[in-house]
Image 1: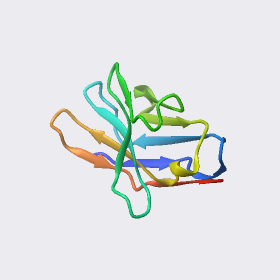
Image 2: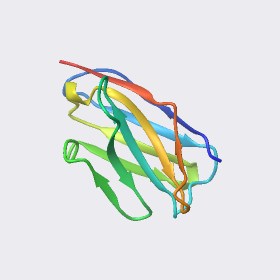
Image 3: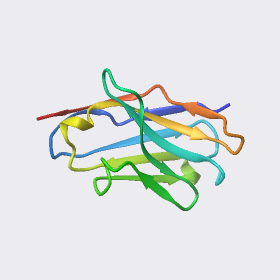
Image 4: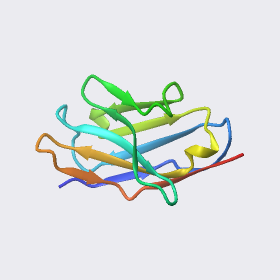
Length: 115
């Protein structure tokens, strides 16, 4: 079992930046895939970005604006979000998938981008 706790959400104007952080209750292994998802009102949860031990992937909608990073020593994964748009408004969730394909989720943090 692992608990994930997100922080860093809030209200920001379009064009602004936010940095989300996710703290894990155990050491993040190199075999863990960490990810950020988001869910806007009335929409399905969507994948925003993933990071493995050496690779990152991004949804087309955030490429060039968001950066995912991990610090295994601090058991954290972060999402730097720049040039935010109103359509980025959503609840953002941290996800960990271990080598056995078990998934763990944080409680989510609200990001609201005003126009």
